[in-house]
Image (cartoon, rainbow over all chains, first blue to last red; front, side, top):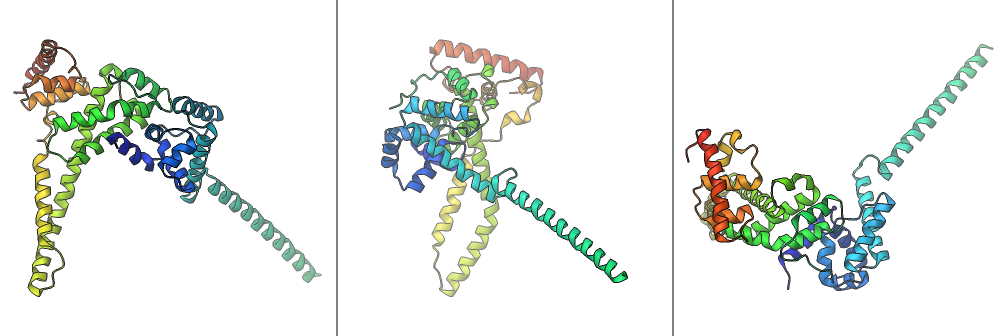
Length: 143
Length: 219
């Protein structure tokens, strides 16, 4: 029977603070229903409610990530490799999403900044070379 | 399967775990309090649709999880804090419903005219009963709104150092609530004996009365 708290656990799937967000992304990308998700994780379907209501593991520092995964393994008996993959996948999707939104410090914006810098530098290099060539040509004309 | 916290959750320990950043503290707090918060909210604000309680409890818990410092354990139990927070959330939800309803009123009037025109042209594809029903639902909702928060109009000197539970008691007191059980629920002492509940409620109400009298507020 579905309890109100089970519905709460489903509602937090849209909030990236919760592990439910990561589990929903993973289940969607792997095309898993609750039964198959639970079996992949190595826990019961009932435990999915608790898991969804947990905080999402911290991606950094690495010790914090490891500690979070250990706690989940101890508390719910989930497979460490699977729950770590669930968290990492959500981190990757989150990072891409933030890049697409142009959040400073994310990969896409850093690449764009590097591109701008590189283009800027090569443009001024070209301008310098053109100027030198012009001056050289002027010198030729004088001669 | 993970063991659920007992029916008498140790709020302080759960809160400390949340504060320490323990990854599953939020889940344990939700499992320990969710159902009882919904039941309590339903008991103090009857006649509302269940989804309003659920929404209010969801918001109160999510708020605590993401901003745990909003709760000060020295000022009362976690249960009382969550009850007050959920109750405040419920009021906000109802207030925003009322604002939404107020904004929609002129639109409804326009719809009525449009429907009348459609009727006149014999080209109706909407049921006017739906509009009337919707308006009746909104009016029923408005009727369920609690009266204006009386605490908001009394001097800050009375409420400044009150805990959330004490503020709630003051509010009930100003609304002329008389049942000890209602006060006891808000104060989180419902598990005490009736005599002890009565004594604690009386002590707090006397203290609040004294403050109100000093500030010249007539109850």
